[in-house]
Image 1 (cartoon, one colour):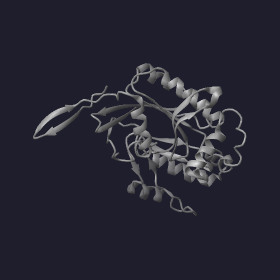
Image 2: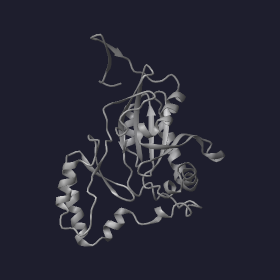
Image 3: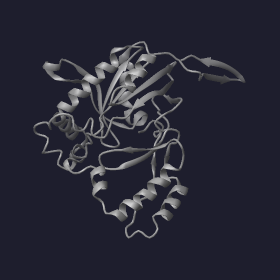
Image 4: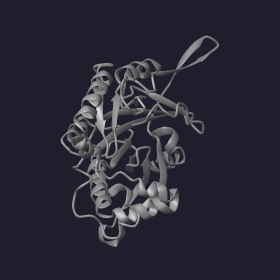
Length: 293
């Protein structure tokens, strides 16, 4: 499983708490759905969502993350080679049924959330008791945003989540697959504009130079800092940090931008994407920012 071990300390004596997969898949699903925002930073939409008679499937859980990206959850109690293929099938279904998903989002989270959906990178999160090395290798070959999360239950009191591997789809790979779904214009008006990449290419030279200075500084904060591209903005992200607005970074970024004729919010959004281990007490999830994109 992992080199990390959990011990209970009582009266100066240490006893190991053995982690294991849950006996049934459903308790895991209910636990995550009830605490989806705390555990993954995703707003819950639906459980066991039917894909209709033609596809004949049921998506375990649906949600929307903090960037407006649709998220599919698939759970397996233990190692199962079909979870990734099954998840990809549902991703294809999702891209072909955008209007249906937008209406679901509108009914659950409101019109504003539905209009701000970002279809450039829909996510698939596979949660299982374990994965094989073949699963991890297979995911790396797929141009989709897929995350393999391994979990362990500790006597029903603690839950550990470990991000084994993740892939990031190209900005246009998922968002422009196939023709737009019928009936999407009513709720996707806001998302039909130009992407941040297109706006960047069309920006005046002096703004490109200013952005280049800021980008150079942010990427220079560490070797693990990378630039993630969403539909509407760039997100500097690091695999090791869980920061929102490092004061020193804000100060230095402000110095870099000195002389600009417009106010620029220079607070970097640095979110952790890799965690060796995180534990949560059942019923009382801790550290809401520890598993965020």
